[in-house]
Length: 575
Figure: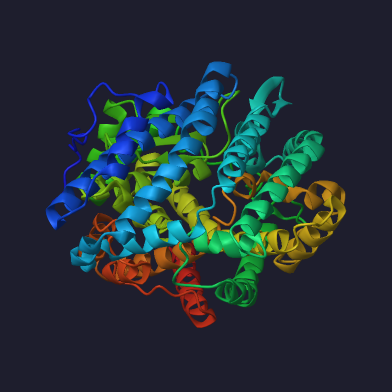
């Protein structure tokens, strides 16, 4: 498949090139134009859609840059004010226009003449958005956005002192791989104590979010926020009951495999009982892997690895480097986590992460790089809305890239043995992440179907669910208070509720993609690129079909794919 990373920014024909969102008055006339235009032919409708897409791209990219800059420096009040201005002064005023414009499209008889092979998902989303819109929710959603961003500021301010040096929690995590058990315990103790300092603050923040989200659901005619959010996320292909089946299948087929891997770790370490600070540790005499020294080195090696998989993939990362579209190293005052942010007008995305020199950072780079490739491949779709693909396909893009690149990770290491250790860590992560996904997802179902719960009830239920998916061979007795609030480290719960089961669905899909890759590399990569090029012009099941795999997370499929990963791990161990 031919593709180029030399993408060009979308040319403006509706808005002037120098138009910016300095205030609402500068952009409102364009929304008014779209709302008032007479759609009296199919040709006029197509031009109207093109103009709407351009406006959405301009507004969307402006909003993205405000958030990117703020997460890169949570200590800068000017950047926070710019983001707050958009959330409070622009976004709320857009929403009534967006509703009216969507309704105008649904009322237009010429919409039925649009090519349904391309436009069906878009029109379905428009109808879904109209059905959920309530004017009284505009102010609530603005307040939710502002509150959710406080999580990044609170977490970004967290640090601990290790060996006389102040370090972020992301930087501190690398010490948990060290073979010195006393050092690991000291670091884990400091990190847990630091997180517990903000335990009450984060509980209070979550309580505020919970109340507001529940009210949004009630306003829209739902009895709880879970059901509202399922519809808002456009989950047309599965239900809450399917999620419950996923939870049970993970418990039955994945947790025993995770338990086996942890027992292997315990024997390697030569200890009687695993503690939470042991689960990532190296045995005595073996140094933790350090695949790179800093973000710049990681990027150069990543470009090489991506290029070996397919030259186009490497060109995507090189283009982002050329345009300064990355912020990779961990530092004080930076928000936690990592993301790829598509920029709908210019087309070249932005990758943000907190690298500290670990294998987990390498995996994150492969992951976010997969998202970036998706952004490049979908850039030329006719409408901006067609690039707003479901997370289940977005995460398939990223998680598949992690596994596709495995065989080229030698570029990060000096010996074959080191590379194999890193590959083993990735396969462990593939297994380890599924019980955590099930834990977080099941917890969210409870949180939002019991909106009036107390903090004490929340801690009790979290402990029960956490233990339900635990392997039983890690002793948390010294850190029970931290264990009861361990959910607070998952930013999705605060910032993007219910966006988490997608990782589980996509992880299964990525394993299936990897199995396909093992059978026929070029065909698998062709299928992968074809699915990503389609953006959201196909349904979720159709996109998985284009990728050459099933959209399936049934117990039988989970058992089948977990057996494949287990066999791959046994082969790696024997090599």
